[in-house]
Image 1 (tube, rainbow, N blue to C red):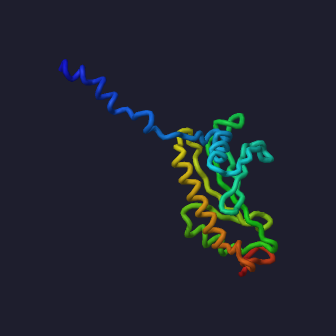
Image 2 (cartoon, rainbow, N blue to C red):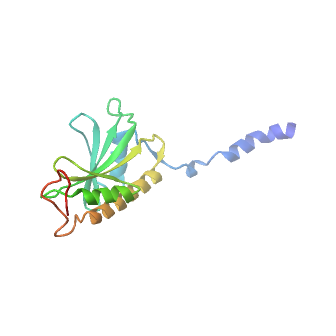
Image 3 (cartoon, one colour):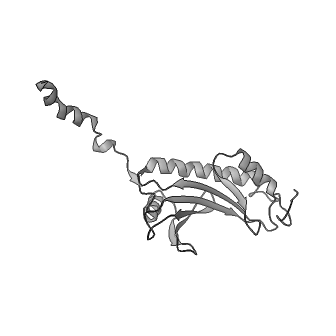
Length: 173
């Protein structure tokens, strides 16, 4: 038993990760920390407040500007969740059918039309205060791929995307 007790400090030391093995974290509950990480990764990231005073970051990926909105914040920090949101404006509105098709098939990214028939794509995430930088960058890369797929799905980069005069009522293509 004496030998086991003498070995205990060595066993505990051996099970703790070395400082080099610890992955850096990003405090997703702190909008300023997220903006700083984005800038450090080469993104433009403007931290501001929305019209309700909630923190948000204006940034972009793959030619699409998007916003990271923070919710459940206390004094613009200690946020509970965040929402990636990208908007796509069409001159003559957009039909419901491609949006419904997307929502029925897509795992990431909820699509909807606003009052002006502009198309939006959102992705919700919890503001984990212990998120590793690698995990966040992976989610950001996945969001980027989804945005790219969605742009193609709605024909946003085409010369003549599917549009309608109004999104009120039952739209037709």
